[in-house]
Length: 209
Image (cartoon, rainbow, N blue to C red; front, top):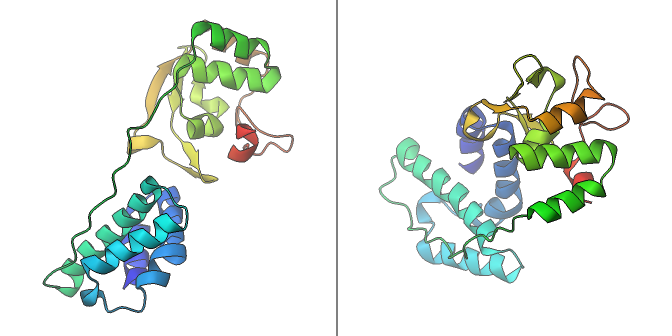
């Protein structure tokens, strides 16, 4: 049932990055554990045993909760499609509040001072606009309106897959003077603003380094 749900529901209702993520969770984690059990015989005890196994393997609570979200949606769909009477209760793990660390003005200036070329422009763009990581990777020269001074965020790259930005909505951001001056040096009519030597989009692992 899991793969029927994936092919019929997930592929039709999810973004490419979400499809890729759910395929990985099903293939690597959920199906190997639950796959041999009839779907109407999965119990809350087995869900708890799954959580124990995954935490013991070193996964963090948030990752396990992501698995449980996929499992829960799959089982809720089974209620509709297979007319099941019940599914097990799924209790998510507690996750500590996410910590945020913001750069001070002085730290931002120091970071820019030691960055050169394209890396400098990317850092400046992030600081001045708040664009997400994947949105910076996917930014195209055609997204910049030099006359009106506006950047339109239309796409995002997640897990090396081009898709829509968060909430599936485009948004418009003013083009700050500093960004305009920095990008104007490399301005092109089309293509990605930040690319490698072969004009391909940069990979996240390279950017993190």
